[in-house]
Length: 593
Image 1 (cartoon, rainbow, N blue to C red):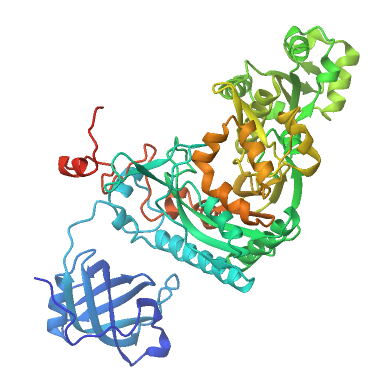
Image 2 (image 1 turned 30 degrees about the vertical axis):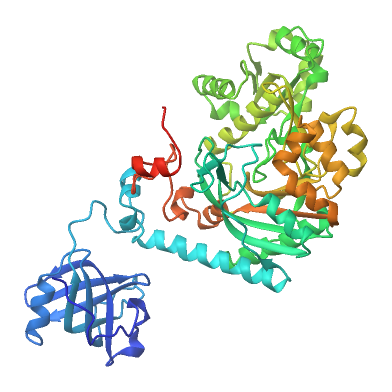
């Protein structure tokens, strides 16, 4: 059986001990990192959350401590009581915080023994992620993982302190709410006391934070868990954490200003970086036209160039027919790409374009001796000259073209731009480039459902000057919506909300809700709006994503204590799983899969 703490009290964490403690008696507790038996002396590295300290057991000085040390194996949990002493000359370890000292063991207690772990407890572990996630409690012992969670804690504290200092209140909103299907799928929770009825887990606290503004709280924030039953990607989890913010009596500039101050504070205190404010802003339309993305990475150039007007009457039917069908022809100039990409690698770029919806990718290699391209024969000398001037081509450049509907062109060239930048190592990983993307479309048409759907959510306010377009051209209406983008990754997004009951009802009508459907789904919000609603707006950050970027971790899963994998399962606990028939009966559920 393992020994107990009786009569023993921990005095220091492992790395709290330094040369200033030499001669003092200390007690440390932690895990055995490794043990080295050199005959009459045994050295033991003991690890706790703070780091590692070396313990030495000398057979001549303390036979009992030596005997206990000889029995130690990796990951045993122990206590060591002893005196701090300087290491022997020449035995110091400059790589360790405690490299100048060691503890001469007087007493060792073994609280629990450990089997050989299936993964090594070490930094920068090169192990299969599935094994790491199955034994997550061991993976979390590793120093680099613990650093991630110390960082996460510090960022959360900065956020709370910042909002507190600026007059915000942290208010918790419910986890069991009414399902209001619009957007991603809800996770549903059956009710035992209301047979046949279900709660939903919140995709965000959106309606509740708006109700808090109606309640007169004026400034709210919350670090909150959210849930979405959607297809997972590398930067998505079915349950995730948001920094959720809402304010009354504000416009877009007000929301942006305070959030720039928050981000500048986080980056200053965590990374020591002076983030210049105000951040660059760009409308959604400009971002798509220049970068083919609503979350552009500004750390490199290679912007999209529209050449539709130059090729509208050329001899290349792929281009001319696209323009006739209201599409566009756009290009990116890969500087020195002709020298850096072989023909086979260019074919690989064509496949990348196809992966994102394009039917193909035309290309031109610009060389000192002239143009090299299978499409060159379709252009007159003047047309070719005009294209090369438009894209600012020089000898050695590779020009890549995609012709299609705008959304396909943007998607294909936007992704191609990123792929090429990574292949050519054009991105400075030490840079942090912030960008606000503003004036998103309010609505988009869903061909499958044959109706307009909200780009953000049904409560987003249209731009004042576009309100009259709601009746005639809903697809042209811009929203008072904004995303904060960092290095090509969306950190968060928000909007000014609709506070007028009549405008909100009109919005529901455009989204295809009957008055009864709107009442059924959002009746309590519409009812609240009858009693005086302030103009209000806010933002929500993906907190996991923010920590991931700041930590420079390999995966977002490395900053979430117990994450799910691609199919939304937990490899450690084996959730989701079957439940007892008794539980299903209590919930009035009968399975028919």
